[in-house]
Image 1: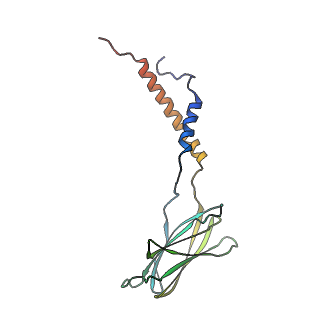
Image 2: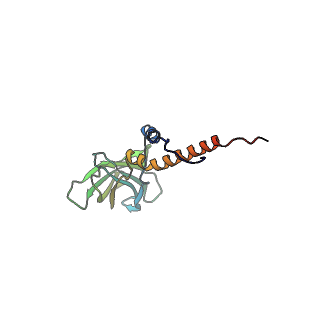
Image 3: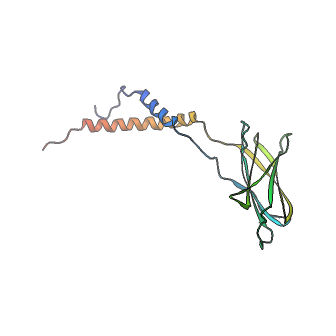
Length: 187
């Protein structure tokens, strides 16, 4: 009968397709863009903004990312080249050491600096950014909630994709069979 699916469809073929798709794929998902925790706050002679992507890791990899935007408070001059920012975080929900990192200019721009720190658990952290330079000293405090990076593992992605690939393979098989069963009309 045309269009009928039989038992001759091999499940191993579908598994092989899923395996091939997942084996060579390197997934670099991102759980979301950085977001501001401080915007244009005036401190000392500076206007400071802090953007963050506070990812937590269990493997000891530093993933708490902080971007510091430093502008002169009066907007009449440039930020001097030897202006440096540092970021310090401290957990607020449990005892733990304060961790600090010196931020480095992004692409040589002193007004945009980047630092990364280890955030070893989910929860609230106190964030302190300190600016030192010829225009003086400034500090800005804020807080952020660290969360795990929510990318699924490769095995879960294969499991999620399997039903769609299987249905697509079955649909393709039905279309091929229909074309084989249909005979050209002779007039």
